[in-house]
Figure: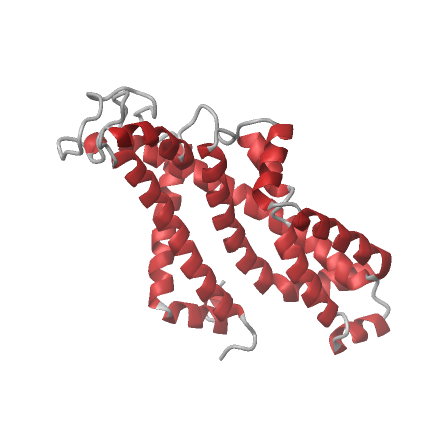
Length: 283
């Protein structure tokens, strides 16, 4: 652990103050999400806590962002929405990069028919408009979190697969790979013990990118009524806020937008810094 902390990429990353600030913000979001998941918040997200359309006040933390048209705390709903965002982001990014890295590594290393099949598969997926494909998969898998997981995991693996495949195409001709072949190691051992570990910098960067992409896509699907059901989500909050804007009440849409914007912005900045730090060609 100490060796990893003092490695060149980590030293470079620690010198980037903006990236470290963004990491602290991400950690704060994660702490909120874990606290909600573990049940540390006693207030239910659909509990009525005040009058309808109550403006923000400092009387209680429940009223910091006011209440919606049903008298529910917007602060509580924003906090619960953070949990949904993190769950969707973690599941999608983890499954997406795993599937993409494995398929990309196999395609790039073995080539020939295997490569043709994988390339044809992700080329076909990419030829379909992204939002239409997500909506179609959500309809097939059903609404709710399960449908979101199926839709996202079936499409988000394409990016890391292409990148890892391209990297493996270069690495399979490296001298250490040729030496491993000369020593009689099997193809699968060479791929997963010698080649794939050298693509982890790309996998880590793509994990952050998929995390952000999953959050934004979940908000879009939930806004359209095809995403999360029965739980608060930033997309659902934005959808419900449309009627409230007519009455000049913009606290709910402002809270949902600010919550999503802060997390996505910090992840994007941190992902760029991480990519620069892990790039072997950077100084």
